Length: 369
Image 1: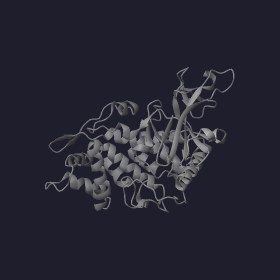
Image 2: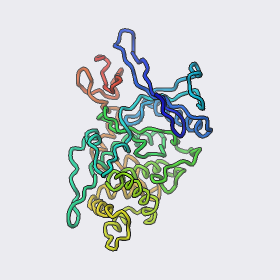
Image 3: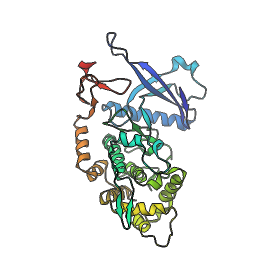
């Protein structure tokens, strides 16, 4: 199967990954990405290839698309469609799931798939003056935490994604220990290097876009993820076409008009007796945010207009709570659980030599294959 996008083509298929002739047959689902003939597309493809190789050389990162390698397609060049700009494809293991934006409910509610995958058992209302408001504090925390874990390790390796948004975060239903997966490194750069294109998604981009700050380049990703967190927190920002319109107005006009001071913006909306703002439902949601001191402080710092005042990914995890700091420490020690073994039921750790994952995404110990 083939999909065509703005920068090129993605092909989906399988390959035989049976480890030896005596083992049970294994087919792995893969996707192969190729650029179109536009020079910028070819450069983006080369950059994405280099970034993925850098991640793979360090042993891979849980929560980042699993790069398998590259493939020379010259032997089948005659079978390829016209307009392809490279014969060297980037190959990843297919992530079973959809991008986060696919689960944004038209009414602003939470998709059951999201709730189950992120293990959100309840989302209690937030008390405000005169009643309650149903902002999604648990969802916001989970999306931020599960995205910050791989982001911290990307930054440790000197990689800035530059385009974090719901469309580049996969909800992976078959890997409960890493339910979110960061994809698409076509805009990514390494520390000290400038992007070759001035590409960015305006509603998520920080004030310094498109070039990361020289002193704290990783803060570019912190800002973009902060906007993602704000969006999943507030139903008014995900509710169908109105949600898209509201998001654009808030991110491109309102928040900048308050010099990116989230506390001042939220307070102004929460105390809006004159009705100066559009999208009035958002006012109550901002009032709810004012009653969530941890999230309010975290989002305020993540969305600072000054890149050097934004916290690192590790600092963000500490602000979210000790459970997230502990998960990061576990991942750094190489003791990340990849799930329970499909044969013996015991945890399969990232340090287990010879571990194997089948086409369903289920892990096995070497001795259990």
